[in-house]
Length: 298
Image 1 (cartoon, helix red, strand yellow):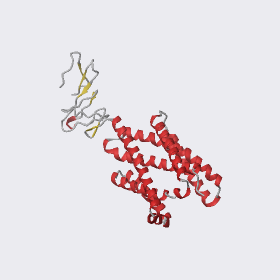
Image 2 (tube, one colour):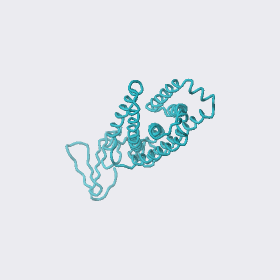
Image 3 (cartoon, one colour):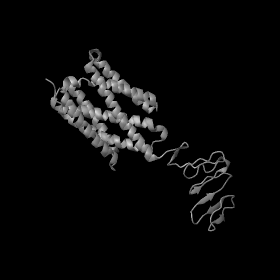
Image 4 (cartoon, one colour):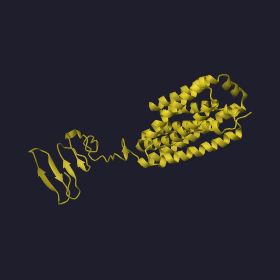
């Protein structure tokens, strides 16, 4: 039994063995039906096995008051939700920057090495298929929480993506590519800040944008194989820019929500998942902007 202030009172009811002990000062209620107990604003006891109290805390092996706080502990490991959120978001953006750097280096290798250039362009379609397979494999590994495998596949995807994107150096003026890249970086950063700071729930917008993206893909494919209209192609580029600008804000907000609800053991996989989505947003936004504003070579 615990000692409390002199203002406590006791009451017996229903001729049962359960006693209620209430503290007028602290508004605490103790219910006893066994030998073990744990402490919170309300205490429920279910015999020697401990059980769960109102906040779903476990009482293990007669060790009451294990000091597990639902908002600050996970599996006995102390963590701070704000600190965890900050770490996950920081890691996600580091992953984006690292992946973009790898992609840029990979694309540059095609320009400086004739052997790599021949390897890429002699089987370009195969590289595109491999690129798609690798990014799908990385997504599957993330879903299965296989962090190392997902990271390796994402790194491989960044390399292959650089090889296939090297074609832009043959189609567009290099100075134009640099200008569009800076424009894309500014737009991406601005929308990421909006997504991280806005109080508006962007979930519905994200769903609409994803449906619109599928529509753009279908129209683009139809235009490539059947319609052959430059006007439709340009219009789809503008729609694509709007979609990926919105998705950047949406994915950033989603990252913030996942980071705030994530556990210590989930930090790396959440950071990798969010980093990959934001990387894809950046790449697609860049390509759409380049198609609109890029200066093509003669």
